[in-house]
Image 1 (tube, helix red, strand yellow):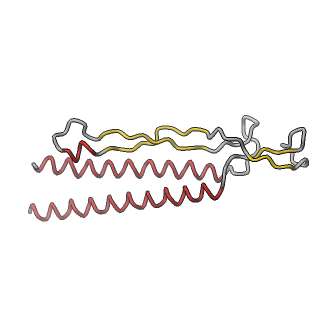
Image 2: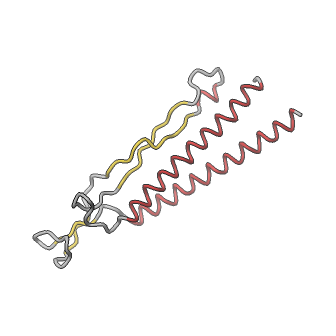
Image 3: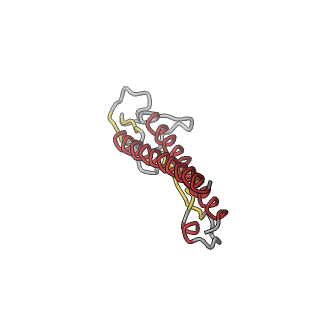
Length: 148
């Protein structure tokens, strides 16, 4: 493998890891929004908050590269955020200002425990991305020392 291909591989690996970090940060922001609105019974549209789900996609790094490792690498992107259409929880509370005619209030479809698990998973994935970047940097430093 040529020196140029090696350098391209290091940068591609860094870009791939960085795309994962960006995607996980976006995921954590979506989860934070869900947690912040877990009890919001009336939004700007007059309806209860609906849980948000991040949608990810992947794209190849180097589709035409002769190197099979580079061809196999993909970047991950947070492409959109969609609303979870599942219904919220109905709670009988006729004194609540958002109660319907029968005294029920629809609370958001956010399960705090599920969101916390999702947050921990996103946090661990982010930490793994940081660790991989540190490993890539370490390998690049070692390669530079070898080449001197």
